[in-house]
Image (cartoon, rainbow, N blue to C red):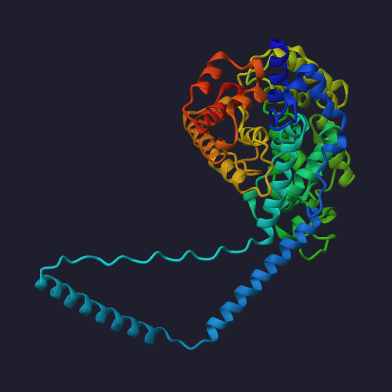
Length: 508
């Protein structure tokens, strides 16, 4: 039983989001067939999609942003017009203010003198508490971001193991955008993940790559809508040229990786190849606003040579052919396999595991379901000790699952992610959030985790028995030290906080 419990703990923590509280029986179910428990989610592909009422498409959200921006502009113009039409009362207001201040000073002086003469101590009167300004209503961008975040969190909380949701978070971070880029990026962060990532998590890498690079959110994030072929009609008319951001990140971060065999000339060639990849703007001149379009007038004419192969000028098809070849490049297989193993198993993953994943990726033409199954079927993925610490997102989701706290609004989780340095869909750069212990196990980060554990325990600790929760988390796979620590806690709140900081809960 001890070995089964240890394997069950590995199944839930390494590949999923941890055991759920209540009567889920996750640890018992995982112990009976750990690998089968994890892989069961791979046979439910529709469960990866997130299609809920109220979650809108990227074009619909673009229209909402443009309407909001037009409304704000109209309000500013109306306010400016009102201000310019009003009589200039500034001099009279200034005189009145000076007179009032002078009278108050005279009154304060006479009052102070009277107090001194009567022998009373002068004291500053208590100021009434300033009334808090009423909360401003959320605009459509904030509402959408929160609704998308809530849908993602709820799905992670309710999944049996959470393996496919872990795959979603991995690929979403691999092909990341940042919600801080601007209003379009913030309102599109969730729809980007729903439309470009989720449908392909158990499909082919080449299909995901194409969906990602043609999604308006990625084109906006990496400025490809600004990239013009120097010899294109638009480039000659506007005297503006290439923007290589998207091309560089495709090769460096999305496919081949640093040292993957490409040169700066290849980056420039790919940038030329994908000129014209853009999205329709608010005027809808190229198509329905917020949709991907290929702008022939911005595309660099002529054939291009990339990674030793020449691509004929075939418009949109030129770029799609180049992406398909890059997806099948041997360096891409190695880069993806290494990053995949690092995320799930160890910062320095076993080379035998990386080689097995690389071969599975290459032979299957980037079949991501097979890649995930190969990971779970590999002995190295189960034998490696649990040295990786959960990311902030994994930590908060695991806590919510254990305490059966399916959120009905996302504020606590979004606030916790901000505090712990992993704000949702908002990495500092196009390389995404770090996936190593050094990023999350620093002393300051662990101190913040302890603070959050204490906050959770202060709210919920009186309503749970941490010793029973430990059985749900790890059963007899829990160490003697962890059991003793929780049993010796002075209060339930303290015991719960200690459980949430235990190695069995923090490490995977």
